[in-house]
Image: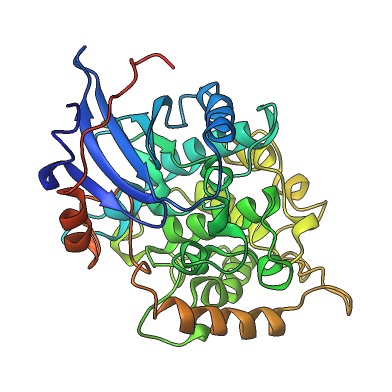
Length: 363
C-alpha cells in the first residue's frame, strides 16, 4: 500500500478536511494522500466531476492533484508531495532560523502567481477560500506552491455557515464574510494580504492569548500607513531581519498588503495586479487607484452607512475568536510536520484505516 496502511509514522498532518499521509506509488513517485472527512453530502458522481476540474489545473506555484480514490463512504485525493513543509512552519516554527528577506519576497510572489492563476486563468475560475501560511507549501528551492484549492466545493458542509474550518483560520477572514457568510475572490485577496503582513512582521494573524485588538490586521494598519508615509519601517518589520531588506521592495510589499486588506472588497486589487506590483511592472499609484502612498485615503476603507464597517467587523471577529478558541482545530495544519494538539487523535484514527487502491500517477 502506498501509504503503509496509513501508518501513524506517515502522517503529515490533519485539519478541517481530514488527514494527510505521505505515500509512494509503485513507480517511485512520492505523493501526499488526503483522506476527506465523511459527511459532505456529495455523491460520488459530483465528487468525481469536481475532482476532474481540479486535476486539469497545472501551474508551477500550485500543488498538483494526480488522482483520487473512492472507497465506500471515504474519499481520498492524491497530490504531488512537496518535501519542505509549509510557510507557517518556516516563518513561525519553534527554533527555526529567521527567513531572509529575499526568500520572503520569493514566496510572496510565487503564491501571488498561483492565486492569480486560480482567479483569472482557470475555467471555471477557482476561489480558494482558505488562504493561509499553512496552505502555502515550500519546495526544496523555497518556491511557493498553493495547496488545497477547490476543496471547499468537495466538502460543502464546511462552508454552509461559520464552520470549525473557518473558525480555525478566522485571523485571515475578510470583513464581508462576517456579515454575508460569502467568500469570494476578493476574500482570497484579503487573506493573501494578511499573509503578506506575516512575511513583513514575522507575527501570526492573531495572538491566541491576547485580545482582538491585538490582531495582526488591527495592529499593522496604522504602522503600515506611517511607514509608507515616512519611509521608515523599523516599527513594522520583523526584528529578526535585523534591517537586512531592500527598502524599495519593502515599500512595495507593504503597499500591496495595505491594498489587499482594505475593508471594501471592491477596492482591493486583483491578484494579477499584485503580481505586477511585486515584479515592479506597475507603479504603486496604479495599484492604489491613483492615490500616492502616504496620502490619508491610502488604505481607503471605502465604507459607507450601507457597507460593513470596521466597528461591526471587530465585534464579529471577537465573537468568532471566542468560538474559535473553543475549537480543537484552531491550531491545526494539514501539511505541518509540527502537528497540533489533536495529532495524537489523528494518529489513533489513522491506525484503524484500511489501505485504499490508489490511482496511477496520471489523472
